Image 1 (tube, helix red, strand yellow):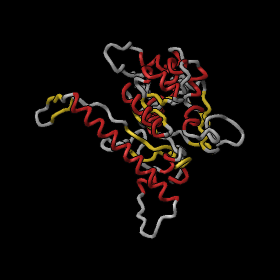
Image 2: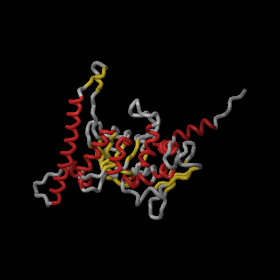
Image 3: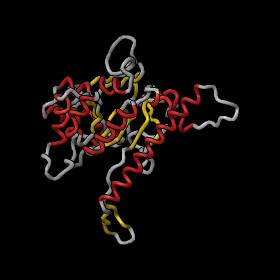
Image 4: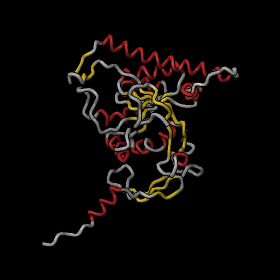
Length: 301
């Protein structure tokens, strides 16, 4: 498995395939839900500033040079997609004995056929606009990830039916002139515009705050049911897994939690965790330490 939220490649535009997994199991095979959930792409940005470690200072780059580098990267991605398309055609036409297999291009075949989405990481409005227009021109299915300035391109996202996996809502706005609660109000703005949204933790450390991110958006206008769907049903739909996950229905995988309160409330505790129909332990080091010190003997006076 390559790519994904935590292991995106900083030097290659295409980070590899991302997989959908259960968070329980002895082997990778037991944990897999879909090995080929999406192809991860880091959309390039305009880099006009860089840090020079030799002088420990910021180096400025002319915009013309930055745009030239940006266009070069986008063209490389277009060439790669075109190569994959030709490779796919060659596979269909009964290749000769001398046909040389290319596993990288072969991995792109489901994307070319529209069977696998591109999970495109982009935050700035220009990146988002260019990525959506690129995928529309290439006839590729896109899921936008990050989307810090998705609100600026909401009309385009709606018109192209592009779903968005948003970054955590607790963060600073992109620009100094943006409202302080820009990331908190954006989910409702996108929802009102008719755009399907989900929330992503974007790292392992704060995955436990996924529900809190949805709750913050609810507190800033997003309907509660939409907040709950944004961490359950909608992600499953985006990756084509809603026949297995996302809702409690007969025939779907039994992945569920039992809580002592509102699942989006940060103070709520998960009492029981069931993954793939099996009761899963929630014991961990932090819980053990909490219970240890909660029950420590009181000092004598």
